[in-house]
Length: 102
Image (cartoon, rainbow, N blue to C red; front, side, top):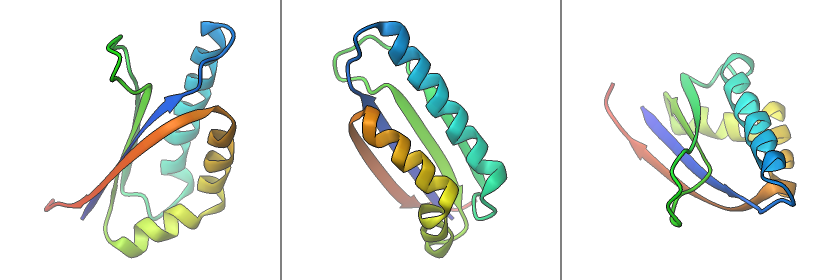
């Protein structure tokens, strides 16, 4: 099994309410990937509440049976919609992929 974790930090927006709206939209998009991409074993997203300077804004945590499933997920049109959405709002991101036993 593979655990795929990505943390995103969003750009600053003119109003904090806009950032919160974008985070809510992003979380909804991530949550919907689980039902629209069969290669996803499990997926969840969490919006950060920490105010620390080093904190990211949102995390995506997902499980896949194999690297091939992870690759199919990353190439899937629904995932590509998410990638496109992020282009306008993301400041930075970081990723960790690792094997684990279920």
